[in-house]
Length: 259
Length: 260
Image (tube, each protein chain N blue to C red):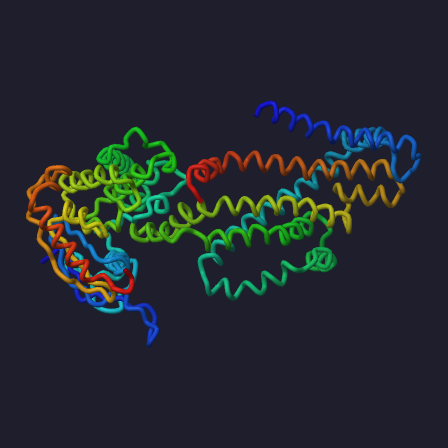
């Protein structure tokens, strides 16, 4: 078992290294300015992102992701609990949710700038939050609807007041599914960040991507792509780490209970 | 006045020709500190009846009185223990916190709450497991947690819906003796629904035998067996055997022939 695990971890590291090595090998011989050498990309990465543009562009991007994701999570959970518990409200809200959820995000970029009079954080955060709300919202509604009726009957028979029912029973019970929705939202937040910054901005990782494209600087452009990829990967890893701690009970419970 | 009065209670699901008459017309009383078992053929609406008594289900006919007060919502005097312990306990939190759930909104100070939790958990013999998750315990222990939670709530009446139906025979005997002991210790009234005839005669002061759906009371059987009861001696006594046979005959007549 441990040998297989060692092998798996080894491959997890080895495969990307080989791919990067292949990239370098190819680009050394290709002499294409669209595909700069890996070494060139890394040099540009160091020049751009360690740490010249960190304060001016990476930090604003992270702030936008953070604020947008936080707002989306809070709104999604609050609204989701409400809609999950009320059949009437759910029936009223569902067509609206389905309509806006089906909207391709770029379609709302121009109007978001006009409505919010902003290409700064206000518009970026609102844009990210708007689209990130849906995975959390839908998962929360689904989870709240799926709560075991025995648990609800238990709370009712003990006359547990509704605030405590929401806080002590509905939310913890729905948490595993809410967290799964949040993870999708986080990935979406990175996409929305790049999209909104690339479309119109004066700072951010997406903005740097646009600038380097417009000035035909392919090294920095690739460096920005590398950074965005790393960002998504690391945010997801961080989230998984938190999830493992938060939902330790859930793994134990699932292992102990035949589902 | 009896502590619990069930008067012509009925529950019908749906209307018109497709209506299901789950509970027809059930009337009986439970006296203070009495242990009453309700038995009936499978699918006779025992759970519906108990939910009606516990205020979780609005009856379509009749009424339930607790201390003379009409039940329209779960009354503060009753606690309900469900059959599915695995689903009525909160898997995300400890035994202690599960038992604390019904006390959080009661007007008690912190020390008092802690004392009630510890007393209740001690009464079911799980003090060592206060900080475990429920799912780390066996089925029988989980049901004991559910019983402790009900005791901590300090109900006058404990309503139990086939609480020992999903545990093995040995554990079941232990839990039966536990509930008899707890009843003495806490001086509570118990209304216990079961499909197990042995269990009903072993536990009860009176056994209420129901008809099949639409449910009515077929017969109320007094159980004059001496206390304390004993799994081996009581169950071997001629009186026990006679009573069990009597209840069994009542229920066999009630079985719907088509379902056999």
